[in-house]
Image (cartoon, rainbow over the protein chains, first blue to last red):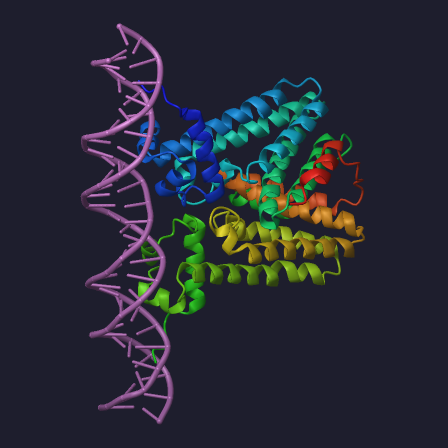
Length: 207
Length: 207
DNA sequence: AGGAGGTTGTACTGATCAGTACAACCTGTA
DNA sequence: TACAGGTTGTACTGATCAGTACAACCTCCT
């Protein structure tokens, strides 16, 4: 019964590597076959619906990793400062060792956008919400916590773009470090919104 | 001499739209032909090297726009606060009216990465440097200005990812607004780097 | 009015795409 | 040892890909 040498989870890991390096669209079946060493037969055996199935599986595996290592600890944190430091370190290690690519972010571009909108949105809201909860635990007001959490996740994602553009991890680590400081800073006050934002938000931003 | 109806710059604009909507990889020649209404003949007449030429032209046009409307004003600014507010507004308008996609950022993924590494890096360094110069004009120290500029560009790029993930402009505008405040804030102090960063940077970040 | 030459649509090429079919294989169980 | 059935490589399909060739066209200049 060929209790195979190849675990499905190994295949998923290999696929994630290919998608990160080449992007989803340009990962053709022949490329996937070549770079993973997994034959067409096995690929369609594990992922009957083809590339869409593969992408789903990869996103699910990545999502599970974040849930376990990042989101859940943030939500369960007693000491928010420690939890946020841990998040920073985990996130830095994770992305540096994975081509500086966030697969969920990559799915917000091109054709993939529609197909994976749901899971992508869930990933980001989970992250932002978990981080906001840790901040609230640390005594920050709900609104301020939500804003800081959103800004931090955006900073990390933008940091990945710059890290890839510069081909440089140090820049990314600097951004992560300052993001961490900003999250923990107990003294920062909120100013008033610039007037042009209020104008934009009220006129058309609720799309 | 058919002094054509179709200016090359119109073609470039149309191409930019297609690339933003579909992504570079999944913009096939037939799709481009269909969505721009420009025939294969004209396409290869204007862009003899095919898609690579088209992408180059699009990036150049976008780069020129930013140079004229964003970078140059920042460098020439006398009043840094006004210049930064202007940048925020221009950037918000630009990306909201263009599918929330930064084409340079999209070129940091997949196969495009290598082909366009140079212009992509130049775009981001130009932006960060111009913004840092405006901040220095406003009396912020060079190192602090460089950090804040980098963080701001990262925040904007991350904001775009979240805006696409959420299908929502209000989130993006909020991020831009708080980024602007952070840039202008005269009081913020810099803390010390978390120890884990120094460890990472010194051990392997200089790749 | 009549070229001249830049511009454009169409048909074609070979390569590569995603997906299917199926025979051969391999391993745990009997 | 032999079977059973999950697993895998290979060959194939029709569709679509990027790029080329070229005849028809259209507009400006004389």
